[in-house]
Amino acid sequence: MLNRYREQARSHRGCVSQKFFGVTTPRAHVILAPFSQGQSLFMTPSSATSPSIIRIAAALLIGPDGRTLLVRKRGTEAFMQPGGKIEAHEQPVHALARELEEELGLAINPAHATYLGQFSAPAANEPGFVVQAELFQLTIDSDVSPAAEIEEVRWIDPGTDGDVTLAPLTRDLILPFYRASLNAIA
Image (cartoon, rainbow, N blue to C red; front, side):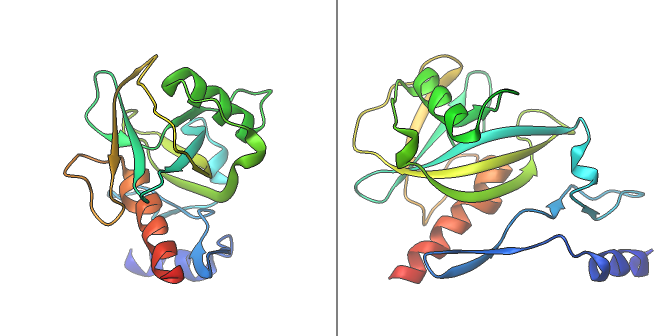
């Protein structure tokens, strides 16, 4: 069985890299899914078209002090990046603008959002699903207020977990990505 997984890893060619502030990071064309007996270790882009994918636009919102804003939805425990589902007719950056307005009262100019790439991880609040996030960076210096399904907002230092439960996408990919970019420019 282990040999089968090694073969899958060797034969996979769907992963590409991207540069961000001089740091080369893997782009999430390989989706690492929870592993259990009988499951494949890797999901390739062709298998990522299954109905278990939730496409979202997410924001790495950075304040003037370098902290990043996370949100927690009503009735959940995990903090995550602000953003939400991309409608069928929307471009990801426009979905992000709509979601930030709805959830935080934050009006953004989509032209000011910097695209960082696509990241995928197990969904925090939908068991058995994978979120596929189009991630954008925005620097903001305005106040935000939780609205719609958002119960709480919290600014955290990217060097810590903020002593809160984090969604897998935030904990395993986005915060490490942000930390790596800070280290590269330091």
